[in-house]
Image (cartoon, rainbow, N blue to C red; front, side):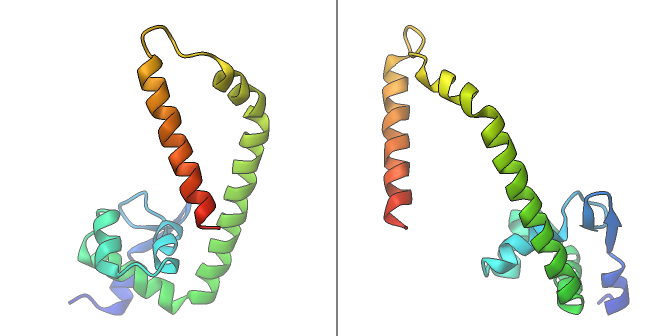
Length: 128
């Protein structure tokens, strides 16, 4: 079994932030699932990590909880700001595309898509 210091060295700081060494997966990606209370084995499978990688990530998060949590909150805020920016920027384009009729021969597919969207929206509303 690897020592704690070796597991902690498996986390590196890159331009993307705290990252699992040898991957593009950040600790903030892992935090999304930790916060949602997913079990480690499930997170490992979702992110296609090895046992050593998920252990290193969780150990680092636990050992540096305040630092990781602060950075995670910053990432969440920045992500929301970007989402809002692009939503605002593309609102007119999205509305124009949505207003277009379906291409000839695609009417049945269009109706099925609209039904699925309505069902999804109803599910979202029922969870509020």
